[in-house]
Amino acid sequence: MSNPTTPTPASDRPAPQAETNPGDTPRESTRKPRRMWDSRSLALISVFAAFIAASALVPGIPVGGFGVPITLQTLAIMLTGLVLGGGRAAAAVGLYLVLAFAGLPIFSGGRAGLQVMAGGSAGYIVGFVLAAFLVGVAAEQIIRRLPAKRRGLWFFLAAAVVSVFASHLPGVLGMMVNLKLSWQAAFAADLVFYPGDLLKDAVAAVAAVAVHRAFPDVLVRRVK
Image (tube, rainbow, N blue to C red):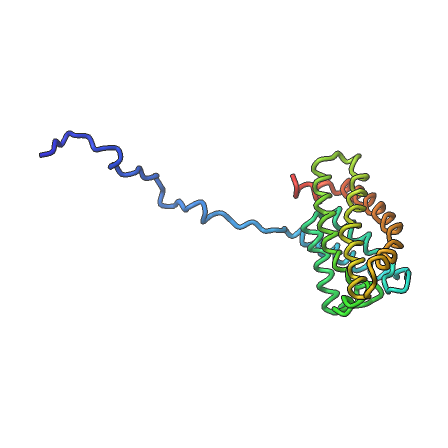
């Protein structure tokens, strides 16, 4: 016979149950899903998509014989990235491209539709989203790490570097594919855009500093 006073081993004891009230619900069920962007971000994305479209409607300066004019779009793309940050800038450019491919005449020269991807500008158009995203990511780091008085130079350097790798390089590749140019010929055709792009990068950097000074939470609150 077993001794009723013998203690039960700890391993055989039932695990203690947490006390709950009838009205309590699990924390997981009350946690609300977080939205990727709030209404303010969506509004900014729409405004900057319209800004990019407007910049494309300003008559470009034709250069060379390959149908790739000098336009204000590079300025608009860089300013969008420097102000909105990577994700929202890419969304703004993506919205602009969707509308243009759908038929709105908001590409340079009033062009529209997917047929523009058969021309010499195709590589530059492909680079729009990547350039906006990369310079936006750089802007987030600059805003996070540097005081306001030092941001202008770094905005410019970020825009200049991104322009080379995310705009000019795809542009050269696009001319090689669509226009059947050699690497040397496509590179030479692209060189004419460098002085203007550097000037536009500088203007975008100055404008971005002014925007962040006037609206200090437009990007800072998203990266803190």
